Image (cartoon, rainbow, N blue to C red; front, side, top):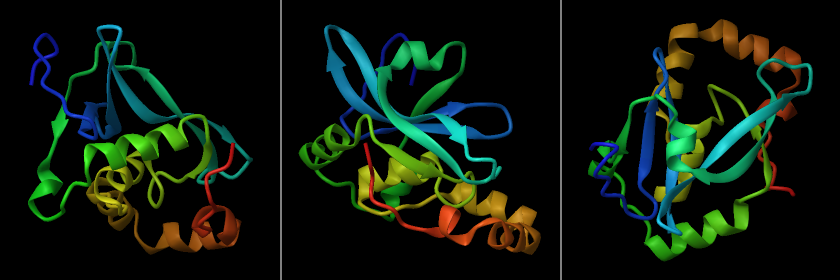
Length: 157
């Protein structure tokens, strides 16, 4: 997929290469001739390094990408049924502007993207990273504040 000739569908997961990891966004659609994505953006640390509050934003694809390489990621479609574009867009519309808890290993941008696309959170990248860090991370997270990381809060504005 080239930047010059994109072929995106609402709800496509867009993978942005960030060197050692990927950042994941969901294709929202085209408005005024520009492509838009919804993503977990920024974050405010609450002094707990793995418990960050982030905001869901709709942003122009090319501005978000900058100089990063990116492509449509449909690898998980092999084992997961994508929801309808209407369902995905309705969920994104409801969630834009909300704040969520962000955890790079347990509630990351790939979890968000797959929740929109498939209706369930999946993150092979996060799972792989968590396994490589191992049990020490689990113990560290539990000692910090189990509710800030593991809690399943509703989206809040």
